[in-house]
Amino acid sequence: MATQLTALSIMQDAPVIPVIVLHKVEHAVPMARALLAGGVRVLEVTLRTPQGLACIEAIAKALPEAIVGAGTVRNAADATAAARAGARFAVSPGYTSKLGQACRDLDLPLLPGVATSGEIMMAQDDGFNELKFFPALQSGGAPMLKAWQGPFGDVRFCPTGGISPANAADFLELSNVVCVGGSWLVPASALDSGNWSQITELALATLTLRPS
Ligand SMILES: O=C(O)C(=O)C[C@H](O)[C@H](O)COP(=O)(O)O
Image (cartoon, rainbow, N blue to C red; front, side, top):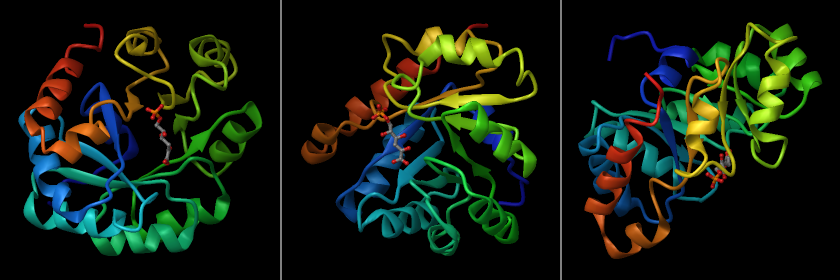
């Protein structure tokens, strides 16, 4: 894995970054295989569950072709644990300078979460110009992103939160949106029933969402 990943290259890989919540380590590798089979290799496994780190480790070991990162990274300790587990990037729901510095020290690309103009300015002060807009729908959705095109024309976003197949295209058509994030690719019901082909189909359906 010599390729130098950046937040931008991670965002550009596919139209949708799946946000994944796993409660069982044994689900991790078959789930990741199913996404890979559907053409999605950038995977955000959240640290929301106690199994998150072990799931990241299992995927990183078994499937080097996947680009597995950690979601819900809230502080330096989370970032350190994620990097140790094999995460190749981090996504955070919000931003602090401490977290930004920790990820820099770890050489871990970070996609920091923002929801306001002030937060964008703080992240930009620290050199972060590729940002997650979270929670996107609840914080103003596509009209908010359009409003930010003026003052923050140099920022590229990955809106996440409330995005679905029904509204993803409204976000992806915006010039300041590179990709979106969403949990719909990995439904809890598919994990529980081992319906890996459903996950593959949901992934395949996202590949054509970005306007050409
Ligand atoms: O856990 C995190 O770090 C998060 O950032 C939260 C997720 O991004 C959203 O929960 C995804 O939102 P939905 O696609 O609406 O389910």
